[in-house]
Length: 536
Image (cartoon, rainbow, N blue to C red; front, side):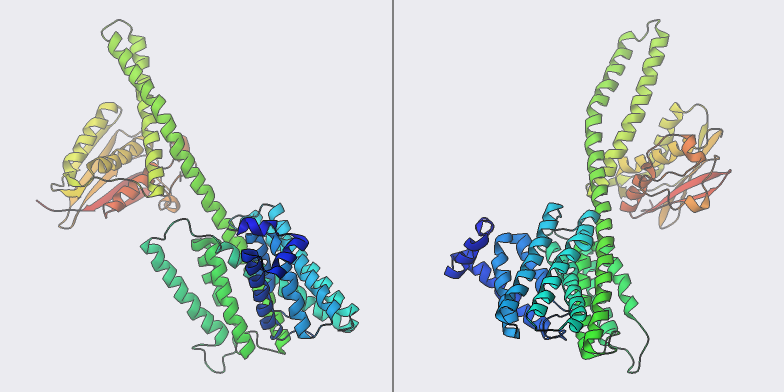
């Protein structure tokens, strides 16, 4: 249908509508009927002088129709608006003038959105600001000005009534464009992936919360009869929750639900906006809803933009890690081959250089492996093998390997933890290596590192104690975050990407264990992890 609608422009579109040209005629008829029906509903709700209302759905619906299915649908908007105002009592030429204004409103709004390449997902700050600060106010101004001008020229209203009518018209259209249009825009495309069970539980929880809070705030549910305290601020936590966790789609859905309940409560005189005449009540309500909707959309867009940036960063890290792995493997292989070729010769300096190249290449390989693991964690693809693991033996093997490469300090093991757990031996060894290498890096002057092994009837604990520079108390919970590095002396003590402890935390968490740190600045740190186990 899109191709056919895109060709139905100008008089040709009207002709096709009038002669009933299959799909195009049906689409035009449907849009005109929806515009007429929603317009009649809006004008029945406290319209100013009968032709301007603060609850005006057609503006948002018209913009969505043209944005999604092409500007060739403009005759439907003209006809719908013309018939609506004609039936409301406007003279023929006045109804035509209002219809032209409403049509131009939709066309200008869509033209501005498409010129600025606004995406229907509204997942960037640029897109939301274009809608809220440019497209919506300008297009609503056109409609309100032409509409009120037509009413004045046709002597339907007099000059003293013009300001109130114009304000009502403009605000009603504005709220529709920043509340109804974003809702339909963001939900006009299907979700990229099916939500997980945990996500569905959270979705159900916020849905119930929105309904309960909305009924309490705007319809007085569970409120005492003479309650007069303002409670409309209670909707903000849920709007923030929706924006942070569900993006623009969730934010617009929650906002629309609150708006619908607020309008019902205001019409019944039981909402926080139920003081004064119906027009005054709706004026304050729609002003509040418009500002709240714009703010929520901006927050949701910023969150979505940041999330997209994180995704692109993760994709780059994954791609770069894979690309770096191949040349690094070749470099490491050739250095080992050359070492074997000249082993036993008198080229001692060359052998030392080759050994240094190999050491640094292995360090780089570990960094690349961490980046690959990080990208797998973010994608939920980090794999684990299940086998019986003797953690006591695993720790001793790792210590023995690292002791061979660290002659400056002694690594001592105190205690024991005989028994087995079910887990991934390689991943758990990776955790122990990470904790030991961190201790070596951040205790350059210390002569020893102590590994403590303890056990209870429920779990076993491995602790790595160093006597280095320590970690400030305020930083101790942050060091397990992705890419986080403690500022100051820690950054100067050694290089790193700030992902090792994050990966270790994820591995221990997968094994249903805990990873934590106890540290005092200037005295050292003790990193510990505990795992549930089966005693022998």
